[in-house]
Length: 121
Image (cartoon, rainbow, N blue to C red):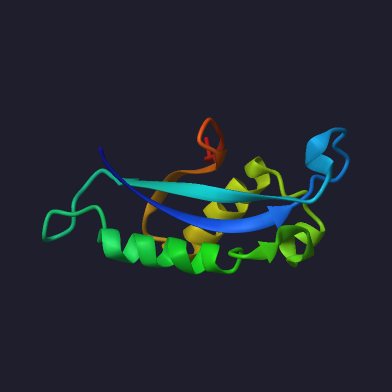
């Protein structure tokens, strides 16, 4: 099995609904996102996928979130914009953009020491 991964980043603000503490107030993050994909076989030139294509798709997804107040985005107006839910949102969008690849997981860091990952078991 082969895996490749790419990372990107975006900046946005949010507040957590139903949370009791500082994160219930409006605040921002410099989010870092890692996407991992895999394949049992390599393509005709020896790749799982082109890093460029994977990063392009990941950047297209995160560009919609960049410099936004996430709570006002369509998806997050109904879903609490936690790191876990942001990871799931990006995972689902990436899976839709690259259906021939196995998306192993998407990890979202809200700080250098705190992250959440979404993957399908």
